[in-house]
Amino acid sequence: MKKTMVTRTFKFVDAVLKQKADEFINLLDRDSVEFAERGYDAAAKTSFENARDAVAGFPSDETLEAQKIQLTAAKDAARSVLEKTMRTIFNMASNHFGAQSAQYRAFGPADIARQPDAELARTYKIMVPAATANLAAMAAEGLSQTIIDTLTTQGIALDDRIDAVAKGISDRDVATEGRIETLNTLYSYVTKYAGIGQDIFYEINEAKYNDYVLYDTPSGMPDVPPI
Image (cartoon, rainbow, N blue to C red; front, top):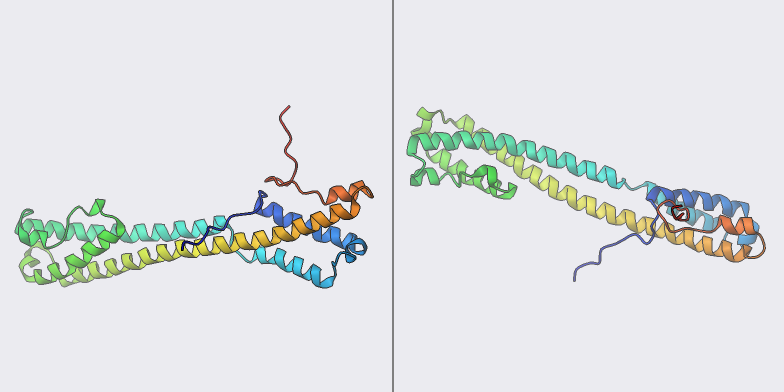
């Protein structure tokens, strides 16, 4: 069964939620006498603070996206150098055997620029044994064991970077989900104490009541209709 995607239970910008948590912790210190009757003590404060601090332990979405971009750039660079070597070997094979020959086709599909990364990685693995088998025959075209070794090294590098991108995407998804779950937990603390604060100060202290009012908007402030 496919796992349900975790989503934010709030509309605040993440930084605004953390700011609200900081603000509420200070308010609860100020109003500790009133809140003590509702179970807010040192242990409850520590739990609230731990929930706030846990948010800072996760990398931001922007950081995770930057890491993915860096991994993708490294993969693209590895692909570029591999393609160059493969085109050279295809050219050597075409010059020696002819582009329509069975020997040339043994080097794999030549449309490497259009091949997805995984297919290109498969093509280089076809090319390595074909080039090795025809090393003596194609030596006059410039093929050498050094070129074949370079092809192998570059192919392995591309394989590794394809895996790194896949892992980076997976790690980003896991980290993003964990971050959202942690933010949702913090939001549950904020809304709990917002509700208690409003209940305590309702029709008793308007200023303090307003301190505990939350607006579920990105800014945390009430939406103001345009004039």
